[in-house]
Image (cartoon, rainbow, N blue to C red; front, top):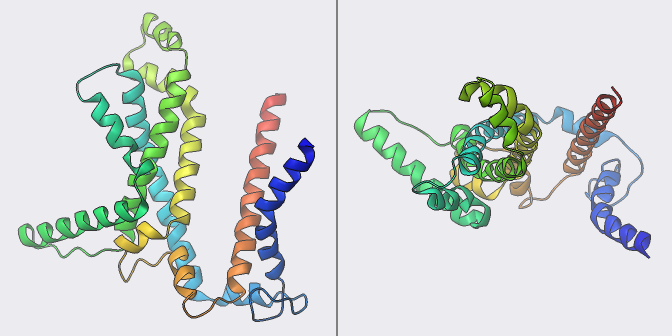
Length: 264
């Protein structure tokens, strides 16, 4: 009975994804109609310059946003877990976790107003004409991602035995030495998990990016979503198949590395 429930759950989860991958090899122009085996849509995807540029921009934004979110979220989680009770701690915790519960429409609109005000202030006071584009999307995604990173890092530090850090301090290590040699190695898995989570959220986002982007900031999800208005082509299925293959390869390599590390 348990195996049947597991099979139903996995089928419900993976059937649409595998169906999309299968139709990526269809020769028919209709995305969800089989017309015989063909690789024409992978060739068309490789020749689609706009989609390649959008994919490259999305990857760069996601990597930058995840890195910034890991730095800021890691510091926030460390402060919440290690500084004990201090004035404003409850407010800091609420503000750090707000993006987790706020609707993306509210977050996107608030960030848009912030960037518009910053743009107006920079133009009035400094004479700079700032536009919205990849940088504003990166900052918006980092704002959302840092909330997830802070939550993951805080949970890891709370579960961590503080006596390890205290022992290092008793042996003469300074605060930064303890952080570098004891705390960071212990929370490295949570930092990596937070980075990957922020990267995935940024790569997948449409709503917030639509609010804060400009003419020069069209990400891949925005491009695919806008293509719904004129009709999708199986190039999107081919793109999904490539992303799934890359993700499976990354997970396989990570699992292999962890297995080798465990046997050493």
